[in-house]
Length: 177
Image (tube, rainbow, N blue to C red; front, side, top):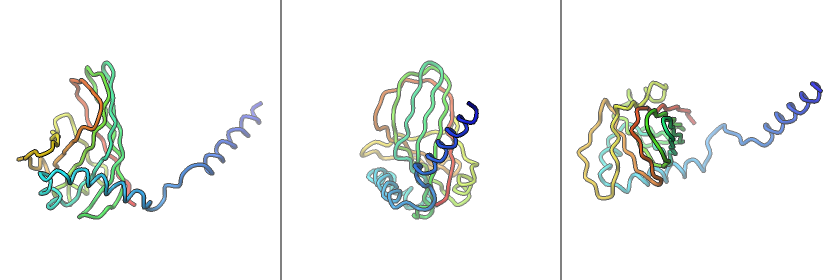
């Protein structure tokens, strides 16, 4: 019986190797998705000065978040730019604690004022806490928002409905191409 289980497990592992998608190298489809995500935020002229002056930025086209009762979280995948060039992938993970109910999706972009802030992000030394302020992007808005500690965060709700009174944070990962 134990020998049969080992053979089955080995079969699943081999099937996983054959069926799984390769993740090494640069995928041209990623470049198109990244450009579409950037274009989504570039339609808001109030962000022009950030695109023109930021050393780098990370854009998340879709972050999905949900919560029920006292616990919630979210996840999304994004693209990292340094001086206008696509340099890698990022993942965002959120955890929230407190009264909440619902689900939503949103797009998020984080601008880094200088190389030091982008390097902190790339080395995994970057988190957004509950005290961080994200500006909600609206059509035709004029913003006086500036960098806070070298970072500016903008969010555009996409769909869903969520009521919450929570504390939490966002953690990011980075992987170069």
